[in-house]
Image (cartoon, rainbow, N blue to C red; front, side, top):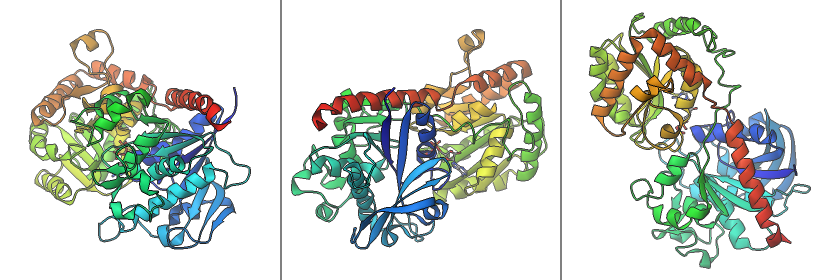
Length: 488
Ligand code: ADP
């Protein structure tokens, strides 16, 4: 097996910086690819948290001026990750969320911040760091789209490029007047280049110009070619369908392992599911929920947005409570949704607990303690919380869309008869189907043996990175072979 080197370019990598599933994937894929004989170096912006975590650091490239200030590339390690960090204080030395300032608005210089990341990636890909020659540049989401575009327009020898779409809704769209400022030539501003509805589209550019496009589930790969889910890019994605594929995400089963999870009151596995009861009791106590052993305890760990279907909940919760159920919700996001959910909790103390914020410990405790984990998304590229839920014996209740449809088997009558179901799957964007799903879960849970088999089947699902890493490895190798003559 020949050795292959990948430069992964992203704005997030767990545990250094994470706002969602993107960070989980970028943080976990390198170790899984290593098992396939593929070495990954991850290029990240020098956010304060990234620079703090870096050790064994040395400067490997310097810029006198990069989008308004001096900058340098630092090589080092953090945890299991080999990193190149773009230290550019004028762009990245800001606390808090990587994209949004303290006023709640996007940083006004995001075009330059992520053009700089792309420029550094393109420089590294073309040999700026001595002794490092990647075969593949793997660009994640719009923040890395400019890496693909700048490499394309630079011409000459270059690695193969792969654009991975973690969420088509975030597109990185900037005014056309910035074309020269972000380092693009005039001829890049065409419909088959970076132009997107009269603006510059960073994700669009990556999709238009990468050698391969992947997204994070086969169903989402099909959905984004339709006007309903294409977010204005479906035409381009249909045009590029021959290089577009879907590879499911995995989860890091070292971070998410109920048998070793230090966040839990009790650790367990599929043979010792009885121990899970202690986690349920601890969770109910922590959240001020009634210590009711009979209730269907439903969990939610989510960004609170329309994408995630969180606006459907307030109307549906009364029915859950009327049937004796409980809800443990953790999330943050849209202020109006936060308020509506908090109001539902205030109205129903002991039955509905809403925690607004970001809390990894509580996320683990919810997965380890609830009966069922609800993911009612309108669209979901892959979704990670349902994978954690499967692994933790929390029965996933998910909308039939994107990666949710690809990872959960509905426990309908035929599936039950075949001992095959792993969760409950319902039509997205409907309060009625959501109510029916909660009813079905309530009824299924009344049969403890059937429920326990359902949990055990979920826990047997392989949600690790093993299979997906194999698929990325095959794609990278095929692309490297294809690029070889072009680079000769
Ligand atoms: P997305 O990336 O669209 O937000 P995913 O399901 O792909 O959704 O990934 C979400 C990740 O973020 C999961 O690892 C989940 O556990 C975590 N997460 C989401 N909200 C919170 C929160 N409020 N507190 C802690 N972890 C959260």
